[in-house]
Amino acid sequence: MTIQIKPVAGRIGAQLDGIKLGGDISEQAFEFINEALLKYKVLFFRDQHLDDAGHEAFSRRFGNQVPHPTVRSAEQSTAILHLDAKETRANSWHTDVTFVANYPKISILRGVVIPPYGGDTVWANTATAYADLPEPLKLLADGLRALHTNLYDYAAPRNTDESGLKRYREQFTAEVYETEHPLVRVHPESGERSLLLGHFVKQIQGVSSNDSKQLIRLFHDRITHVDNTVRWRWQEGDVVIWDNRATQHIAINDYGDAQRIVRRTTIDGDVPFGVDGRLSQALKPTPETRSPQTEADKKHLAA
Image (cartoon, rainbow, N blue to C red):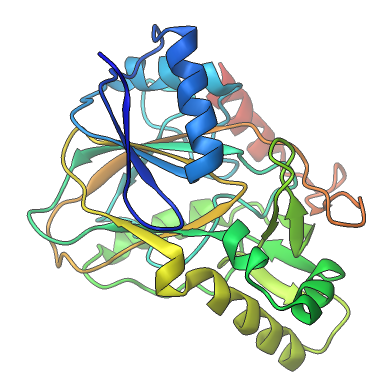
């Protein structure tokens, strides 16, 4: 069957029909998906109903799967992150795992248990957000760098189990990560420039905390403006792939205490570089301060 592409919104997102995802998809089909991903940034697939093995097999076509640096993978998996709304809700704008230098280039999420209403996910195009900036703001952004950390300002989501949320946060921040990224990164494949922000950003480097807040708000509002986004209504069995180097996303917390479970894999990314060619720099943990327990956990995940 011929693969069909249906744009879902004007600036980002397309639904692909006529393909069954898995590790055994043809090279031609995979290349088609990869090219579409670079163009549309987020790809939506209905009625896939992958199991964990199929999910991981398909993910490996894009590169090396990487476990989350601070959260244990799902049982009997080395790379799948189990996200249960009872414990955590990603209800703020972010790009996945930017508190490490080589954060994931691609994320692949599948719907396992979907609430009867609500629970949509929204993605924003960080490349068009940059492209639409007036030239003076582009010049400003090009020269800025920002500190990202997993010790961000947690907002307690409604309708979550407090004990489960506490355990998740303790695990998430057991090892503190800090990385300095350029505010504008250059995409290693497309060459596009995009704004690199999200809820892991703590501070714009070299300015006061007040100026930092104003600058973050200025640029982040451009990313999340409604006409720069696409919203997806999940169904069980859906799979969504996004270019984590050129997007942000948020899960809408509007489904009360209904169950919502999704599972995610991520693909190892490159270290970003800015307009001036400077690479991102990991600041914490250093080899001297890295927790032995964290290293043991990583060996366990890779086993």
